[in-house]
Each structure stands twice: as C-alpha cells, then as structure tokens.
Amino acid sequence: MQKSNNRKLSLCQTLIIITVLLCPGCLSSQHLSRRAEVGGDGPQMQSQLHFMNEWASWGGWSVCSRSCGGGASVRTRTCITRNLVGGPCPGDTRQYKICNTKECAAGSMDFRELQCEAFNDRPVVAGNSYHWTTFHGGSEPCELSCLAVGHNFYYNFGRVLDGTPCQSEHGTVCVNGKCLKPGCDLIFGSQQQEDACMVCGGHNATCLLHRSVYKTNEHNNAGLFGYNEVTMIPAGATHIRVTDNSRNYLALQNGRSQFVINGNWKINVPGEYSVAGTKLVYRRSADTWESFEVSGPTQEDLHIMVLSTDKTSGIEYEYWLPPDRYALYHGRSPLRQPQHTENYLPFDPPTITTTTTTTSTTTTTTTQPAVKPPFWGLAGRWSFQHPYQQQPVPRLERDENHRNRLPEIHHKGHCGKCRRVRGKGERQRQYCKKDFVFRVKVLEKVYRGEETRYDVQIIHTYRNRYRVEHREFLWAPNRCDCPLLEEGHQYVLMLRRHINYERTLNRILLEEDSYAQPYRAREDSLVRPLEELCGNRGTRPQFRR
Image (cartoon, rainbow, N blue to C red; front, side, top):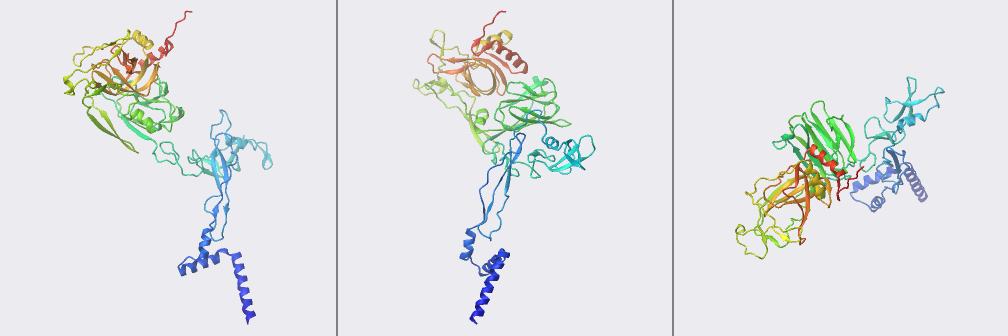
C-alpha cells in the first residue's frame, strides 16, 4: 500500500514537471487564481514579483547609414529574463536616431538615385541588364522603385536604405521599411517636441512672448507710399510670425539694412529663404494674405518692412525672446544709471505709474516715472521746503580751459525757435566730428530738472568711438525739445560723449545743434557711404592720385 502511494506521488510529480516545461503559465495561472480565491499574497508570489524581467542597458549606436543629408543609426538592447511569470519586457528591442544631418555638398547625387545606379549593368529582368533611374510613382514610399532608362517599365528592388527621405511626407525618413519622423531628441518615433524657446520637451518657461500690431496713423502717413519699417526683431528671437492681410507687401531687411525679401520694388516668389542663420518661410495667398515664419534663433537683428501701396489694416507680429533679452528690449530696467551724482537728491519723489505687461507665460509689472519733472538740489544745502520755491542747480560741464561753468539754460516757455541742422555739408561734418552716429527708437522722454532725458533703443550703429548698449540714455541740456524727438519714432542722430571736469558725469549729449533727422530709407542711404570717409578714429586722410 505504501509502495502504491509512493508510485502515485512520483507519477504526480513527473506530470507537474512535464506541465511546467510545456506550459509554464498554466500552473502560475492556477496559482494566481488560488491566491485570488484565498485573498492574500504568499511569500512565494512576493519573491516572484521581486525578480521581474527588465531591459539591459542600450548598446552603442551603429555607424550612420549616410555621411550627409540625414542618415539613420540603430542601437539594440536585450531583455533579462529573471522569472517565467513576468512575461516579455515591454517596448522595442531596437531604437533608431537620425545622424549626419548636415546638408550634402552642392551637386551631390540624390540618395535614391545613387541606390538605383548601384544596379546598373546587373542582370535583373530575364537575364537582361539596364541602366536605372529613380521612379517616383511606386506604391510604397520606402521601396526602391527604379525606372529602366529608355524603357517604359520600372522594377522594385526591395526596401531603400535606412535614412532615405520618405516620399509620402516631408521631414520623414525611411527606417526599417517605415516612414518615421524624428523628435527633437533625434530619436525616430519620439513624441518629444521643441517648445517656443527651442528647448526639447520644454514648456515655454525659459522665454517670453512679445506680440503687437502695426497700424498706420497720422504720424507715419507721410511715408505711406513706399517702404516703411514695421518693427525691429532682435537677434536671438525664436518662432517669429508676421502676418498681413492687405494689398501691401511685406519686406525684410537683415541687420545691415540690406533687403532680403521684396526689396528694391521687386516682389519675390513664396518659398524658403536663408536669413540670419536660420530658415524663413515666405507665404503669399492668391488674394491679399502674406506671412513670414522663422523658427530661429536668429543670429542678427531683422527689420520687418512694408511696401505700402494702400492703407494698412494692421500687420500682426510676434516672437519669443529669452528673459534677459526681453528685458533689454521691452523691459523698463535701463542699463545706464540716471547719471545724477550722489550729491544731488530729489526733494519730491516723482509720481509713479504702474503698467502691466502680460505674456503667455508670465505677467510682468513695471513702474514708469511720470513726465512731470522732479526737483533736484544739493543735498544738505537747503531746507526742504516746497520744491519750486528754490532754483535748481544746473549740471556742471567741462570747457576747454578745464574750468567749471554753468551751462546756459533754456526755460520751458521761453525757448524760442529751435535751430534746424540739416544738409549734405552738416551731415558729413558731424559724422566725422561726433563720437556716436546711430539709429535709435525713442522709448520715453522725461524732464529731469532743467534737462531732458531720452530712453532710446539703439537699432543700428553707423559709427561709435565708445562702447554702447542696446538701451541708452541721451541727455539734452534744455527742456525746449531742441532738437525735437517724439516717443515711438526713429531717428538718425550724431552725438558726442560728455564728461565733466570732476568726471562725475559720463553720458551721451544731445545738443541743440546735433544732427537729428527722422529715419527714412533715403537718409540711411546717404549716411552709410560716409563710413568710407570717416572711421571710428576720426577723419581719414585723403590721398591725391
């Protein structure tokens, strides 16, 4: 009886072993069902879950399938099987990435054409050999379909090599017989995309959006017909988009004010253009719609222009900038100090107005001093009474004899007529004599005591003997608006550097006789040739031939 039981037990064990070898999941499923019926996790199940199947590390990338033009490279990994219960590892054993994306040299043969030519003079169809060229009407975009030269048939040679551009969709590449598009991490099939700040997988958190609309008004109607500047987009901008829906034409200048698109009264065809180290896509519909789209980042400033032939309904533009550059061009924090010495203190703080600028990622609150002039006087010299009961102390300047003198002050309301400085002779004389010649946009005008301070954005420098920033203060030693500069307008200015005898003031001086003309395309064309006459070190000697 005992022997019979032992035989039955050994037979049962043998059947269990055979069942495990032939169907490893059967007993595990029975075990799981029993565990579910019992309602608890036994120590055996916990030990099995502890040893789960997992992927080994990725291997190295293979050699790129192409030397230029965007090839494909592959790497593999293996699944480490720790138990028979967990099943296979989730995911792919292979991963492909794009490589050697630089463009091939001009005149290089098309990659498909090269693959078709590899079968030249080889017996393929009924023992006959032919010369082959690319056939673009194949049924599958990743099959190598080649047309027999001089004949009316084509032949399918199988899959194209990895890295061959796919014919069905722009930007996709054939990899392992499938059309795949790489993500921003260069991995094919990846869903990672660049945000507006050009950060792969980002969330627009490292840049700020600037959006505005350009419209004609009574101030710029004088130059309605012809080229007019819409805006200057600083270098480093990304995801630039400019749209217009009128009978005018958009135009574009680079950082050297040279036309790139639609310049010199010639309209270019829509398409892709290389601008500022990146690609620009110019689109124009059959009616009146136009657009510029630039992915960026740009390597130089871009000047959006409009060739006006009719009233402009509104040109919309937007772009993204890193926070530091956004503050430089659109923020209210000046790079230069207000240029008042520490011995001068305001009696009454200027009135502060608050404006709020909202972008898609952040809301910035800034403060601006009001145009009402504060009162300035020597600290500790006078009792603090009503500010306008005392006379302000004017700025000290340096004269030729190294003696301090009080500059002549023009009081508001008793200024008289401003001197107009213009003409070819004055333009050339001041270009060679002054320290700075640049094109600026006036952002703000504030009266400071008996002076006027202009907060300007320098758009282009023709000549500068000293270093300047994108944002500068210009100081006029009067409150008479001489010369007259209006906020929001652009001017070509020729100015000098001013340092007083005590060397407590170091600033850019806008004098009444400074050359100041509204910016126009003609004015720019007259100023640029003067660089051949005068460099940054003064007048160049003229040699007789």
